[in-house]
Length: 360
Image 1 (tube, helix red, strand yellow):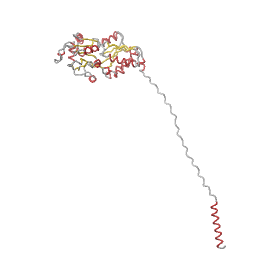
Image 2 (cartoon, helix red, strand yellow):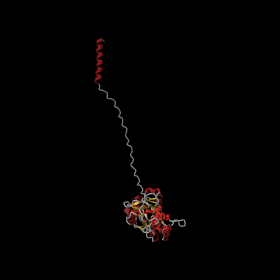
Image 3 (cartoon, one colour):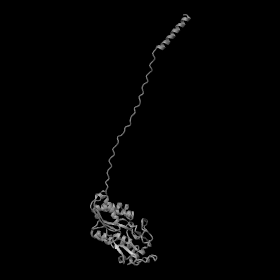
Image 4 (tube, helix red, strand yellow):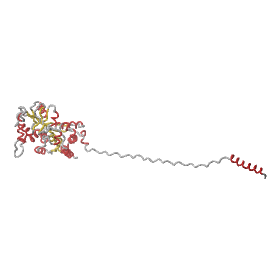
């Protein structure tokens, strides 16, 4: 085979390969297997669990709420305690008590007589502690007095605001005025006017009178059998020439206000109510106020009481409710009335005594 023929054959073969490559259909690419997305599993949501209903706690004192009791409450006694008990009675009724609360101002002695002798009252108000003779009288009619401390009084010795010469007295000077040993103001101090001292005092049924006799007047008299002559002091006081006595403290206020030479004494609340016309005299250099009472330095500070009986409290829910209400709320009102809170321990002891009588 010639060289030309070989070249020609070679060219034909090469062209056939090219044509084959160009004309053959392209191969389909291999399929890629699909990758499945991982399944998303939603977290299970628990159904809310129903909370049990809270168990109602019954108030053991609900039966003594003011609007849960009925009937009448009868109190009588101290004119000093009167404005405080009157306030508490008004609040008790405002809270829903539909009955009557009677508060009579007849003096501590008169209050004990009605409570321990006549047996007419549920509660005796007193500006002094109960006497042994009064306890015996209570027992004679089947009553056992329960002492309930409700506050503190700073007994005020007062003069008219028109008096411009007396600012303070000692207990001794006061005692001598009330026994008649001192009768004119210049006998107290030569610089004072030579004017007669006009005395205004609570009456003999008053616990305030008893307090003044025991803690001031008897101290200036000679002792009898080494004891203060309380009976002699009472006789001296009641026999004082020109002295005016009344169980109504408002009458005393009017008397003292009417003369610049007058002197009187009564519960601090009556002074507070009449500050525009009266001034309180310092005793032993100490003025009556919250600070001196709390510090125990005012010499004429004294406790205020109520007295009741366990049988009355247990048989008359309205009396129990009033006493419970009184002790629960007294400290929120006592300063506004004109007195001072009792020591916390005494108030707690009073509440415990009332609760025990209620069977609580």
